[in-house]
Figure 1 (tube, each protein chain N blue to C red):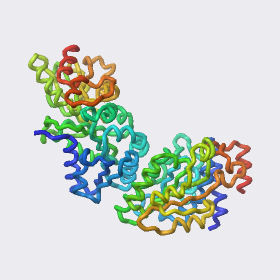
Figure 2 (cartoon, rainbow over the protein chains, first blue to last red):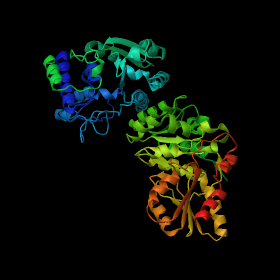
Figure 3 (cartoon, rainbow over the protein chains, first blue to last red):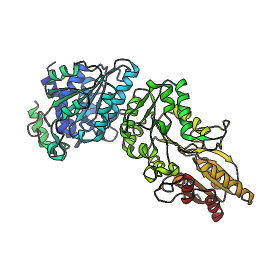
Figure 4 (cartoon, chains in turn purple, brown):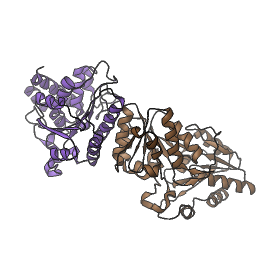
Length: 264
Length: 307
């Protein structure tokens, strides 16, 4: 598959979605996109025609505000009609402002309140071990999100229970609502922190699908995995890239036209 | 006879493990106190001690529920409903997941540990959550029934479990149904609606009132949510006074729930026995019950004042 073309196509969906909804989070949706492509097109055992199949791999978008990116991928995979994307955040929409497992096919876990997805992912992975069907659990964290204490409670438990079926991926775009991570609350050496907690760690270019797939497919034994994915917030649209102002703002008509031109 | 409610929980959940293989139990380093240790001993590979991390306790329980298990998550009530509140809200109640919060050491009957560990607001905060069922068993016999009923119920349940040893006031034959109050004594003049440790005090009060010519009903309102409004409205019509009795703040607990039900009905007069907007402190539980007015005498006083 041509991932550059796929990335452009899905970015157009994200921008159109947010333009129509007039609210939502473009920055993180654009930075995480290749991570989602790697998972949903190459790595995860899933069946969009049977979204609840018992032995499926599970994905937790712990940074739930970046759900427009995930919705674009799920629609493209056929979990629901693409036209549903244009109802984002509206009354009666199946696509909530943050992921809702009851409303949206393909969403495994509710999320949005930061840090909680990591903890739920640990429970899913323990459950997967109990069930014995070989399910793997992937959890996407934001960098600002790692300021939440619950992420570290979850990390400690993931190593304690030797959850080699669990992978945390960090969308490391360096920005959060109030500014740079380093200015708001530094993460320090985040890779070493996860390593110290007992994770097998990897570091990749978070916009290189091949690198992501290789890291995601690495097998580990008796320890969880952590992938530090370096990304660019707002990736793909010049005026959004590395611009903290685009964390949670929808493009107006003019910005929409400019963005679509760049993504053509 | 008599047994601590928390011990009855530990024994009941260990027993339930034999008949329901979906039941798993989690604790946050308090398995000896919450008595989840009974389950741990019986089913070591279905027991998860997550360490001193109550938020993670609830998050992991949610994950296990998504995978089809029935997790009972145990810690002290003050931590499980307080510290972990927003995880319980967003990951359990909001999603309507099948997690059972089996939280012990509720109320001021924790005693010597003092105000930091005495939950007096837990019913109030859990009651505001849609989908949440709240059960407050009054003795060991009822606790076992409540544990089994919680496991059968699909959705989140908060089991509020007290620490002290209590005399049994219900019997094995009493029917237990979530959301259906148990009428222990019928009466026509006054009605005491109680839960948990206050049920035995309500019975004592009713017997004394009866001897004084006031025919007093006692309702064991073991389920605070969903509330048995039919029973409340029935006694609201036929009695002159309703008094609620709970080991909890008068703000937001059983008394408030009953008041919300009878507001504007022109029925019985109404009074509450409970903790009057104060934190607890260290001391022998029975002395604390006296200090905070959680007594037979206070119930009788409120009935007589309003009849």
